[in-house]
Image 1 (spheres, helix red, strand yellow):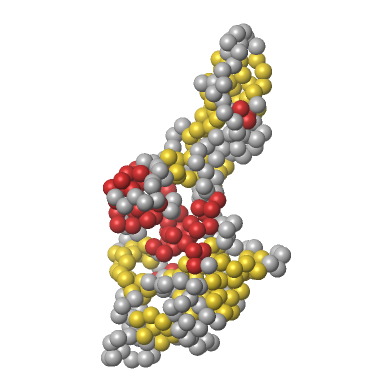
Image 2: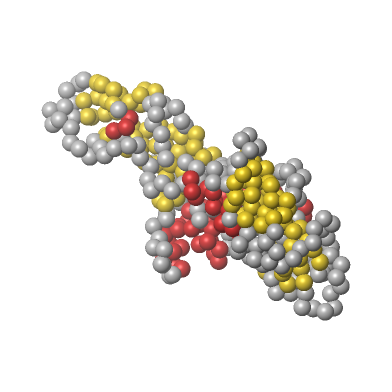
Length: 351
C-alpha cells in the first residue's frame, strides 16, 4: 500500500498544483477616498459550492526539493497551508460605501481564503479514522475580501472518487525490466489491521516498475493511451494463513492512474524464485495462461474488467494502517499530499 500512496496521487497531484485560494486580480489598490467600501454582502451564492480534495483543494508544501533534514521536512508538512480553489462564478456581491450608496461588486476583484483550514499535523494525531476523515471532509467557511472588507459563505470538501473508471479499459502492459523476484529477498513486512482491529503482519512484494508501461483505451473514443511507471501501482501480499510461497508464476493486482483522475485495474503476471533449495516448485497462486520471462518486454494483454479483476490483499479483509500512518512514512505520504487519500482508500477498502 505504500506504493499505492505515491501511485494514487500521480494523477491527482497533476490536478492540484495551486498555490493559494484566490479569485482573479489584485485587490490592494486604494478606492476613492471619498467613497470607501465599508461592508459587503453576498446576496447570491456562487454556482459551485462543492469541492473535491486533490482536484479543487489540498495543501501547499513549502519544502526545498534539496532539503534532507527530516525534522524540517516534517515541520513543513505538519504546517502546510490548506487551500480551496474557490470559484465565485455566479455570485452576487453587494457593497455598501461610506457615502451610503450600494452597488454590485465584480467577484473577480475579490480574493478568497479559507477561514477554518485543516492542519495535517492535527490529522496525524487522530487515531480514529472516521474522526480524521471528518476533519477534512466537511463544511468550510470562505472569506471573500476587497479593500480590507470581508463577507463569507460556506462550501463543502468531498472525497476523491476511488471507483474504477467507466471511461477507460485495460488493453495491455509491457513487462518491466525486472519480472522475476526472490521469495527470500524481495519481500518486506507490513502491518495491517483486520475489521476487528487485530494486527496482521504480512509480506509485501517490493515491485520494481522500471521500464514498465500500461496501455488503456478510452471506451468512448477508442483512443489508446500509454502510461509509464509513475502512473502504475502493483500489489501482491502474502498473509500468515496463505499457503507457503514457493517458486512459480503468480498474479499481482495492478492499477493505472490516469492524468484525469481515473483508476483502471488489471492483473499482472510475474515469477517467484527462491534461494532456499528446500522450497518445492508448486505455486500457491499459479497463472494458467502465460509463461513469464525476465526482461521479455513483450506486451501482455488481459481482458479483466473492474468487476473481474482480483485484489489479492482485499480477499483477506485486511486494511493497512498505522497511527493512522507511522512516523516513518509520514513524510512520504504527506509530501505527496496523499495521507487523506490513503485514509479514504482504506475506509473504502474496509467496507
